Length: 268
Image: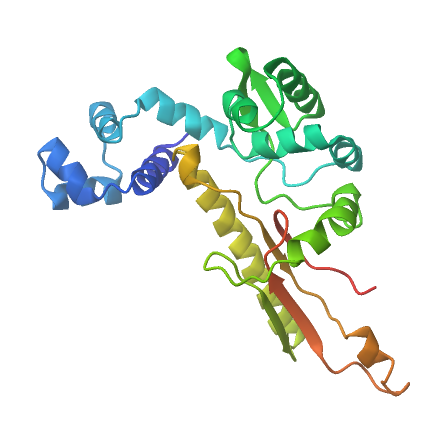
């Protein structure tokens, strides 16, 4: 743990609670400039850190524990892990909730899974290395929310066979939905830049998820994003192409889907 990472987490917690530097200053009887200077210079005494934590009704020990839980997590699973998770719908559901920072109580209150059964699923996830199950059944995710699926692995096959058609059946006409299908001609350099930007969006998503987990469950809702890009030509167009001609259109697909995943599909 470093001072810089601790203060960065405190700033994110203040933002998640909608608390401004001006409000912190008012509570601590300081000028707003003094508070801004403290954060920019990372010039905090332990007492001052505790004072700022109290502004958003958390203990310093809670902040330190949260920082410890934010250490780098796995970004992909093995085929065996993916296969076992998708083999049982209830295990899959509990896994998705657990890595999204739900508590045991929130899971059993929301779904038709009794407490003993849920603890059993959490124990399986602990054995699989997906979560760490601490005393009092406290859940610590061991994988990041921006999880990369194995190419043509169990998760991708499950998505294609059971989820893709259902998800894309939406009209995507609500204010909290978006569907974009883009076509263009890109160079190799531009394609690499596009993929880098999509990966950055995945990182932003993971940070938003992390920041918002301090909010009550009622103020959050399940959100899924699929980011994809591939050299591609519609099969019907390819059938019309002359044998000695290369594909012309280059399809770029950006639309909501399942998981906070960034993936560049290979040409089939």
